[in-house]
Length: 113
Length: 114
Image (tube, chains in turn purple, brown):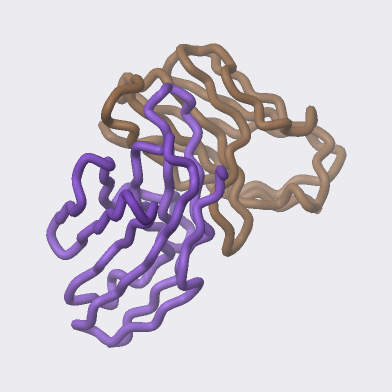
């Protein structure tokens, strides 16, 4: 119940294309769903996050789509660029002060120039 | 200042050594974390300090000893580590709980145990 399943494990996209990464969760107590971007040798950095009271959130080229009934959420990267090549982790947590993030297994994205 | 600073960036130690990892933030965050990350894996939570008190220990072996001297500093003391403890050790901090649960990560310490 505490797992967050992420797919695909790796993704190759042409420059200008759309990258889509999917995550699914079981625990309905989760109420915060962030996406983190990690470059080699660096710590993860928050990219965008969503709460279940909205179905979509967009920040620049990055969009989270959230389907509460299906317990799924996804990250869409529009107009993908070589600089977007990184590992992306979805995560889920509860706003009850538990401080615990459950991370997905990660997706290694490579954008070809 | 929106940074979490970790030192050293790289550390090589023998199994009998004692070393410490340091983490510092000046964002006024009252929760600080240690995560361990193996290559191609997600970060794994080790410890959480909330208001300078240890609130979560994810059953971490005693050869890892955390310390929070004040609200801006977090240390991880290492002793008698095993080669399988080689990993990237990440420190993170977060604002007081509320609607913004954002974790701010440092760049990590890449630890090699020989």
